[in-house]
Length: 181
Image 1: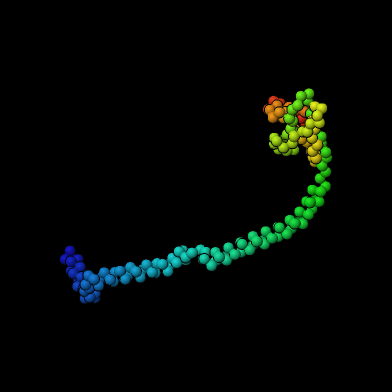
Image 2: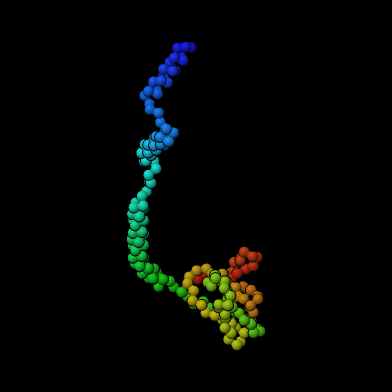
């Protein structure tokens, strides 16, 4: 035990001889400086981790590339679509429309309109004209296809065309007239 105490005292004496006594302020300054130095070393070691992956210059360059490629792509598409539009116009010119006469007979004066697939089932668009003898008619130009339609009489009564032999279920328990061109 005595040997331990001697060794401790000896070490204490040697430590005092090697390190000069520091005031509290100097000691704090040294500790703070050393902590700062250690942090700076750590930052240098981890700088690769904390640096931005994309710099503002890289981001700006990427935006320029995206805008230019989008502009070129749009220009290319539009310039080639004009050629296609010409072909489409030729195709539109080749669409053949045929005259279709819708007719309705009534003994009393009525207002008759026709609605169907060809006008999106919109009312107030296609009214049949009376001839003064109880006949109502309207001629429309329609392209080839299948059309369901009905007459609306006096704005209330929906009915299929009595002269049309082909009908189809309307999905609500009624029948629509069917026109096939």
